[in-house]
Image (cartoon, rainbow, N blue to C red):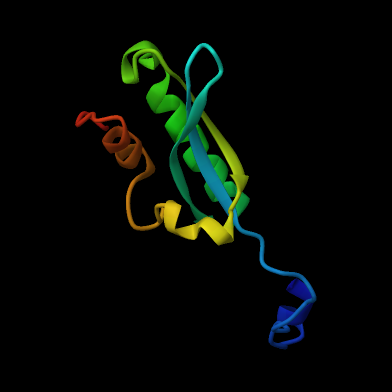
Length: 111
């Protein structure tokens, strides 16, 4: 990228690789390990944005894990974005990830 910019050249449109897409999944699991994906965020085009929202969501649920969804353990993790299931995802650039999680668990006290 930098060599093209230094030479005043445009970046090539096709470098032979598909763009990487990332997602964030919030899973709710019971003690018997049965569960489901509660919230899906994506697509993210940069892994650092995914990591940022994973960190924010984990910080939000820390300290209130027992009361956020009683009887469930919430796990937030980065995951590949599943393009074939794009309708199940919320756009992370249109809404705050923490507010989306608060709404998904029925809380109105999102920071």
